[in-house]
Picture (tube, rainbow, N blue to C red):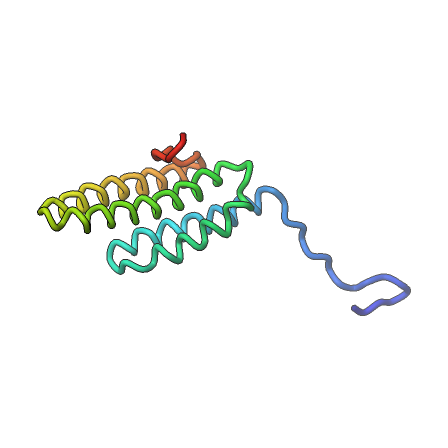
Length: 131
């Protein structure tokens, strides 16, 4: 820091206001959604999206983005449940049906979530235990 006559020549960093924080969180939410969509092709990118959602959830408290991070976490958990149930039921021949219907149901929530995210609206509520 250089000073002349006791005055700093450095430009202070622009403070991050609430709008900047929301924009940044919205970008993280969109990235997590994209990673979930890619997981339908790769199978693994949803894990990275889940990590983003878990890390950013506390920062999003009190904003509409909190519902998006909650939705992303819940979709991941439901995906695991559907995968396990589908794997078990595949032994009696209906596992594939459970998997296809379940993943279409989750895809629906992801699409609606992205639409609402781009419109700056809260995410849809997905069934969750105890609610």
